[in-house]
Image (cartoon, rainbow, N blue to C red; front, top):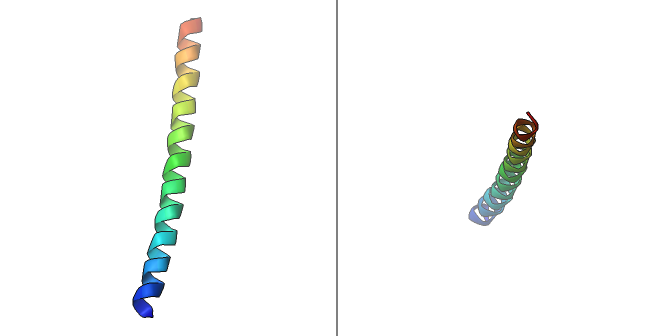
Amino acid sequence: MTDTNLMGTNLTGAKLVNTNLRNITLSYANINWAEILRGDDE
């Protein structure tokens, strides 16, 4: 029972980490695109 609960917690934590990493990656990509587009304008 304890092992199952720990596994469930770890899976949930992994999902949260993956979601956070994906959001950070998307935000970083958006910032890079903004800088690239701004650079093209100059």
